[in-house]
Amino acid sequence: MKVFPFKIPKPLDQHLIVQVDKEPVFYNRLHQHEEIQISYILNGNGKLLVGDSIHQFSAGDIYVIGSNLPHVFKSIPRQEDAHMITVFFTEKSFGAAFFKLPYLKDLRIFFTNATGGFKVTSNQKDIAQQLVDIQSQQKLQLFVSFLELLEELSKATTEPLSKFIYSKTLSSTEGERLQDIFDFVFKNFQQPISLDDIAKMAYMTPNAFCRFFKQRTNKTFFQFLIELRIEHACQLLNSKKELNINIISDLSGFNSISNFNKKFKKIKGITPSQYQHSLLL
Image (cartoon, rainbow, N blue to C red; front, side):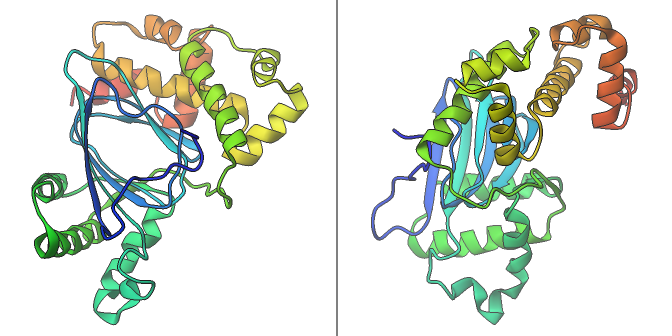
């Protein structure tokens, strides 16, 4: 299967797709698709790469990922399967003019926010229950519940996922190259990675690699690498509270505690110690 574009399988007469993923890990290839994606994570945790940003995900999270927004859920393998419920649809699923009807004007904020994707930060319990209930519904009941879900998502407070929207659908070659880059970085971010190393892996000169990566992610490679390392450090601070900050710095790929503290505060706005303390409140 080609990484870009990714086709959501569906019958010709089905306008809403409800998909349940329950596997050791979520689909782990960078991909994009025309459909907007609403996902509720019942079990599993890891890192979500979406557009130009990296985020932690864990059980209970609800995400909306916009049309053609490149993304991948990188799960941490656990004894229990990762479990996610997702609804896929497009703005034209019910006709090009359907969501422009005056009766549905309150839903426009949902589509505006969905462009760069968002995480739901309020009323998660009720929205999660709506997504659980949708699994077993059919036809009219499913359609009504879907509109009610969009209404709740439109009213919820949210946290944006990505500020950079790549204006094109990436080609298969571009997608495969980005996938190889991200796979390499996710496997090796705890070790030193030089520009020559990553450029050679991508079969490009360093200058060509820098242009390629910046044009498609809106950030330099080393910005991306540092953000990945900081998100990994946050996961360790959350899940390995017995580890001290020096060890977490080493395990996250930083070669000095001072550099780790500096980069952490620049990205998160607080020091690792302050972040660790906030988890105890």
